[in-house]
Image (tube, rainbow, N blue to C red; front, top):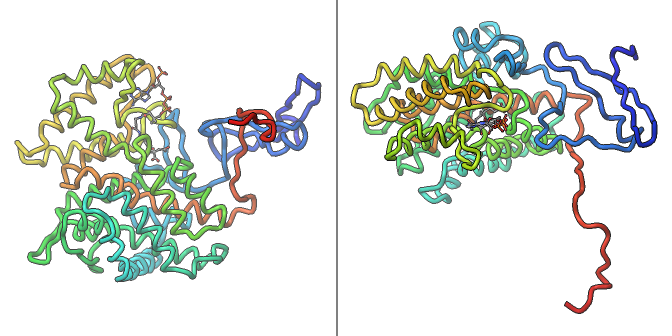
Length: 436
Ligand code: SDX
């Protein structure tokens, strides 16, 4: 091992030295391979939240938080957002290369022919209360799918079985997502239409009625396809790491994706776009102005944070936010004046302006992230608040299942089992307890 590709650790309590290899990425931050640390020096590493820990090798997505770079399989998100479609991005993320015409048509056909759900699945929906959060329904229904596809049990090492699970999930998530909405609103389930595109089919299942024809507005179809491209993958975020950790025990992939949906639900992660709108509605309905809320977000004694601002990785700008901001403004310009959310949209633009000019936010590189704008677009499309993270999950399914597939092929992959820094009681003797 060349000295320049190592780090020397010296344990000053014993004088012992250990050379650890530096693993260099294609691009980005090099890592120290610490696997010998416990064996040679008897230490674990400590990194709550895994902020400085690489959990795996991956070739799917590259992020550069300092420079606002996001690439799927090497292609810049800006180019994919402008030129690609969500289904083409699905193919790219899963297989690693952009498809030719025949490959794309075969992929689209396979997705189209897997959009239906087993009729028994409909009974799962009726077991939920009408006011159940759609994310709770989605966690349950996707997890239940594992009981409908036994062929994925104990076959996670078979590439064709993994591919079939991936295609089934990509195909069925729009149906499940739309049916979550229909059930909550007491509407009959609309079945997928195989002659419609992916985003168009989802909007049709969401808003069509058996009593009249419905064609989703092309502007909304295009905006939804863009939102799905931008949310498709994001390296080792909380929900993707959850799917990897769950899948590392060779669990059924539908069960692993169900765990990812549960993780995404949190307001610090995928639930942020719903939290953004709730925050904006609070501002609109309060007697306080926007500046009052900006000042609250800066007050350390107040747990209030501006939802949709800041990011764990992007300590500059979120490239997805730059892209989706234009789509958001385009849609707002198309809206009829006096639409029910005009005041909310005006408040969002005012908050964005004030925060972007405020030293507290600028000094901490707290810029609007993708969730700040995606919620506004979805609301403008008539999609209810509690469906926002469902659409995030619909989009991120391809990222989750691509990482799961990559992990199942990784020779270095093992069942995930982090250690801990124990801070509990030392040995105590039960027998010595006085009568309590
Ligand atoms: C997603 O991981 C991913 O890739 C996630 C995601 C994906 O695609 O999978 O990108 C999707 O989750 C986007 C993020 C959505 N979440 C939100 O919008 C919720 C609001 N944002 C914050 O909760 C926060 O910014 C996080 C959770 C996103 C990041 O939290 P960090 O990394 O712990 O933030 P930090 O500690 O680096 O913050 C630095 C400073 C702190 O203040 P100081 O201690 O320096 O004085 O910035 C402050 C924080 O208090 N800060 C905020 C803030 N976010 C951070 N202050 C006010 N409002 C905020 N939103």
